[in-house]
Length: 109
Image (cartoon, rainbow, N blue to C red):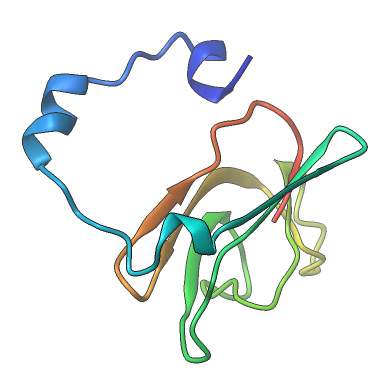
């Protein structure tokens, strides 16, 4: 089960292939992947000045670097507590790449 399969969405693979290759600004071997107690941890090599944007509707900031967000639908309640009213498991880096976390579960980012 993942986000796309739960929503019965099939990506247009032909359109994606037409976009062509766009290499990441780091090697795949630099992404750390660890599974502990059925939880998967991913660590991306961020540059010191790199900024992270996205992950859904947040009321106080659009930049998400150095924050921990719990991605599930929650009301705002007047405080910025790391939860989001409209979670989107996708972020974009100021270095020009994006990451989709293809999971249909609560996610801590």
